[in-house]
Length: 508
Image (cartoon, rainbow, N blue to C red; front, side, top):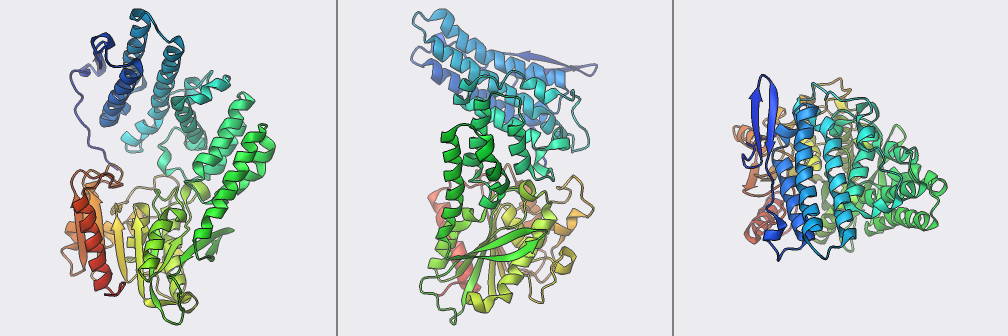
């Protein structure tokens, strides 16, 4: 993934390169709070934090690609502007809440510790995965030194965010100085172990074990927590946290009751993968219906079928048998994208093999997905030899139609660790042929996760074929299409309905 580097605002940081050295002059990013008497300290603090965070985000390429010393100069200067603002109230205001001052300074410290934790991983990314940052072996431990002995810190949002990212780093093991997105390890279990093994106050460990469950249960399927759940009741000393962990784990199981039924569609290396099925009301399996298959997003690393339950219900209400699928993911199973593709191919073949039992028309199988799930839906319609992915079913694994949102079209070179195959073989841009299923695609022009240029290249390439490819792109829209205008929402609904009608997936 390439980022568009932006020029630094001269009012904030001026880079002058002299004999290979970086000279930085930092100017304050906020006027004195005394000049804005109507604005509270907390409001001023929040505004400055947002401003600085936007600056770091917008200029991350230039900031994180520097060597450690100039990088630290940038972060030190940003931190000092916030400290100066907070302390100016303490110095000039007669009635001051010292507790508020202390809490904001604590927030400031951990906001900037997190930037420092991000440095080696982002440096590696901006070095095109070819070079690691020059830091000490105990760099991360040094950044976080003294952060785990005070249980009262868990009340601070910035502290929790910083520490949670630290656990993500520790979960990467030997890859912790590399970019974390592509680490091929069972990182969820590793993360739990990192918390338990931390040299920390027991109350701090108890809190983050509880957080491990209550936060991540929305990101991973419930089976992913089996290992940690078996240990948590012994590792956690706080009874209230134990109860919360037990309730969270049970909730992860109970939420699946929304599905009509759940069936195993594949077992591989001891891993059970499920199909979460939603039938139309009063579904008569002798009267076959189209199948609408959903693959969730999450970078082939996180995500769960439950994310698709809402759209599954809508599809079932329109008369289709809707199915959301588990597939192997990097953070749970330590697999790469090719394993996820294998599972998607197996899922589609399984639907056709079990068409009678499901009450679906095997000639009307629609694959639908968001982000990484869109990639799985698309690439399943492009692979001619599923056997190369370990799928040997006599039934076709190619869908009859495909719907995409925020799809990665070019992932060549994306898996950078421990792979022994050409990633062009799972990259849609390189798999375009003349007999693809009809495709409907939507993409945001300001997508900062899957670059819009990839969509443009695929769109232009497929237009040179006779394939049916209907697409719309939207200015100002990011990866998740948040804040879409009503007219754009209505257009996507209309185009989707027309696509479903035209291809036999919806009755007039």
